[in-house]
Image (cartoon, rainbow, N blue to C red; front, side, top):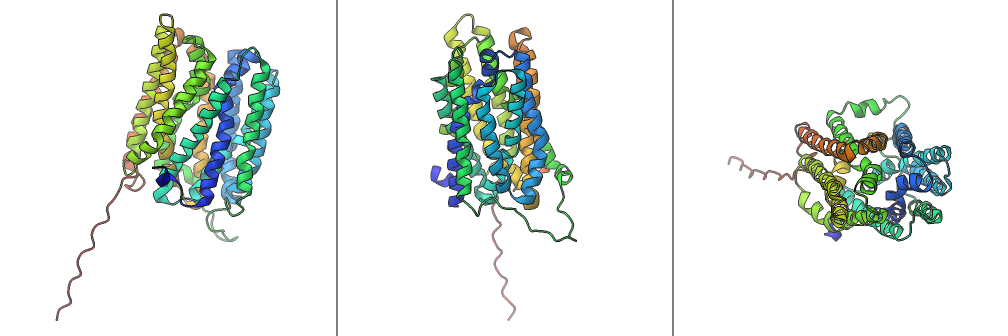
Length: 427
């Protein structure tokens, strides 16, 4: 299964190695930003939520520009400087000591990350064919989470809320790992250049974001993504960690092990899931993702209900929530980018991928800002009910997308009709 999921072109395989290496650094810091800002640096929960929400707002504001630059100049010229900026910003988190410095550093990080995701997806899509793209995106996600898991287990053994230096070390290491995919891209001079035909002065433009937004199926896909990520991914760094530590009352290291369980699930299940969903409806797979995410949050909510009676069972609920969430991710990760690029044209591929990444920017604003107040209401039960309901609504939106897609766009296997036997010419 691994051999079949590998891309045919060696350039794409080397980019996947860069994904793995940079993800290790991401895993070092992913579950601890909210805890770092509040329990280590002394920011209030509300202030820390605003800082993380500000990052999402800046990313959202700059993502459209990133997509335009990718289509105009090529992803290579955009991704390389963004990786350098991201490295500087991430390393600077080790020096944050106030709300003002936190806002400034998160602004730098947002500038760097605003075009990395869309640029890398554009490059990977340009190096793969339609028949392998869904498998390659799934493998890319598995490697991403393998790296995150390795980093998460490493940081779980290092960090200590009573020792500032342990957090400073992981942020500096994270900064270094952002340089690795940049070095790999520099060794591939023919990769990441402008897609589509160059137009003359008198030729009409291929369109812009208005053209992308007029694409009704893609617009529906964006709505699905906004709902799902707001009630799913955007809750991992703030809602999940805060609920686990404050309501379920587990040690922060349990959060790190929960992230490891998430990674184990993804790494073990991703290739099998890729094989199972190939040739099947992509919209139905997206609907299942919403249901799986809802089940994960319900398990976490159960941990909050029993935390005072059984600390072990509560901790198991935290770990199980993350593992179930990971299973849903194994379906979302190959399908969402594959469907996005199935709807895109080469001339606008950067903008389509930028719009897809903007989904995470919008949810990154809404999720952190709302998670704190919702978790503080009714001992977190309001937050659980909200995210569960949102995930189920996303499933309904995914099912409504099916009628707007062609059979090929929905990923359904088609069998070419047999050619009729030639009719003999009359004698």
